[in-house]
Image (cartoon, rainbow over all chains, first blue to last red):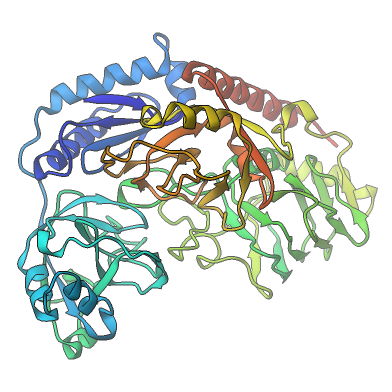
Length: 237
Length: 334
């Protein structure tokens, strides 16, 4: 475990190993341990693949007597990491996300297949046959980085990003899959779309998918897509 | 409480406060005013809490009509803002008469100006903040930049603000206090600043030559810069990180200087993403983040290294000064 400054109001704790299910669980466990017993001046933390970023208020940490802010923070994180232990299995839910693959919702489906000598149907079968782990949430509010994309679908990002990717787009970028919660620019390959709303600022939690959750994809037809509820709690999956 | 009619929206005017921390693990950036120091000075000048919501004005400002008499203050970038032909001075409280029309026009120097209104701009808190998150479409006024025809409301002014406004009322239709926040207390804006940085987590990944260039070169701000980040450019080949090392996406911060494979750095501002996959060569110290927010396309910026301890000392000193200025303002009358 390494602790490096991320400017003067945050540090990043880097864990051993990268982007494995075990590392995500350790990051999750550390984040939970930090939040369970915060130091004065602790603001929030962001678990990711193999790291936890810890944000703090230097004024509030410095106002407590003793060592410089970074040293105080480091001692606290090390103590909490020891308390958190090695993690364990990811403490997540399993969600089955409906996807309408191909057509206007998945303009890159054929090209992704062509890049690997696969037909569109084979790409769909591989993509929805796998189980994914949410290893990070970021880029935009609620965007899940999904670990577990079958190696035969690993595809370098587009040379030129699209200036507008529609909300709900299910995509492949490098070794990961992901879902765009909002219409944003994006460089991943679009293979389908989900009717689910991935982020709602008025819901608690606002992001549908959390780090540690597991995800499977369920193909749905264009007709079913049109009448599908926007949230898993609003009907059968 | 006052209604403020938006006659012209300006280029990109949004409601901003000091951000919504606590939701980054859901991918929600804290956001808030890009130049947080300017907004909080403007707020305390009108008797608001430092984090009240105000307007962030970008390059070309709005024209606003105040339906009721209001106490306002302006901070940040300089402009020729006027009401009924009377120039409005920055960094001091100003009482506007009922019906006053305030026109900002084109900002003269810097990129962002801030307007605080006594009582703050009254919009609902979303995820704990009143600032506008434009890309996700929530917060502020309907989650978007202002448009002509919008009507904003201010909240209840503090007792101090009401007393000050009453004392200024008999001086004319537009009357400013005779005192201001002195130059020495304001952010030290400059057209081509050298901002202070601490080393980033991947500093060692960069070649010795790239690290040296980072601290010596002048970088030019590109037009594609926005509230998410400043895109900078320098002569090819830019800054080179060891390409054999695999970067796993991890948390980033406001002020993070990240370097994509093209070698041209990006400095993250208030609407940054929450995690990033590019090596971070440095992070701009909190004390100088206001200077970043005032850079416009074509401006240049340089970087100077300080220790983490020095960055903390600088910020703590600025915070002490802000506290002193705030207390001083609370003791002032017209």
